[in-house]
Image (tube, rainbow, N blue to C red; front, side, top):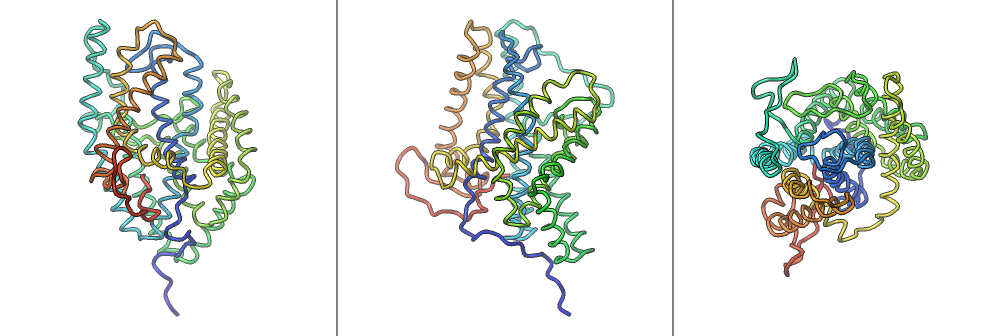
Length: 407
């Protein structure tokens, strides 16, 4: 009897097919992170590194809703695209690609971004006469030494790389035990369940489990801001990654989910409202279930909405999707620096917020076009070079669909 292949073949689109709506959705998830950080200075209670004189409850409510689904959506797409790349190019190539485009940027960008963040905090203290910046005191049981290094907004790169390594190791064990064909059949069955009318309930289980693991009664996942993994985030985001991974096992699953986008978005609006209105002291299980279902109905609904709106390549959307990884990597300290002179100006939030976003995005889009898009940096981060938008450049050949899948 012939031995089963080492890797189960999975149906996939033609090599040149690009899922434009998923590409746009991935870029949107990254850009929503910029909006989230731009809103944080207006949170009541001086919770942010640079705090504005304006306290706005609507701002923090928008942050809360975005936080329910943004990173779950991103991790789900990373799993979907990851499965696609693995079945086209093999596990070894997939792992090397993730190390190059996730692990290496974490190591290379962290020192400069950390230095800029510290400089912004010192400048904020000096300009606003806040006194010297006091080093935060670690809580009992917090990591020390090198493990205590803050990962800032780059924490998701480290966590995603950890998830990729664990998933590939588990996949190898499962294939060794079950065989590739049986493992493929089980993956397809899980995919069908996730795409069923009640599949969102299964997708939400790891999210709810992650919230319960935190044990703090909050309805949002606490990120690992140091090099030490946080169990709640690891479980919730690994579950999101695996949801995308399994959905890729059956090509019909994603369109089935996308077809119910209106119902999912209506449910997301109701559940998000419920998650915000849950009273303090409510049972932890209730908080976890409502928040997890709110997050995942947003994910399922946005999958369908993006498929409805982005049915073909839209050049401006494609450009922003390509630029989104660079923008998110570099935006954080620049946003802090822009927010410092705005913090005490007697202007409304609806003026300060657009100004901060416009300045930061203008700088980052210009730097992306001039320094990244057509250079080796673009090839490193996005897997390909593309012609610049500014100036006349030769048209580049369309890359393979998997080449542009940033993490």
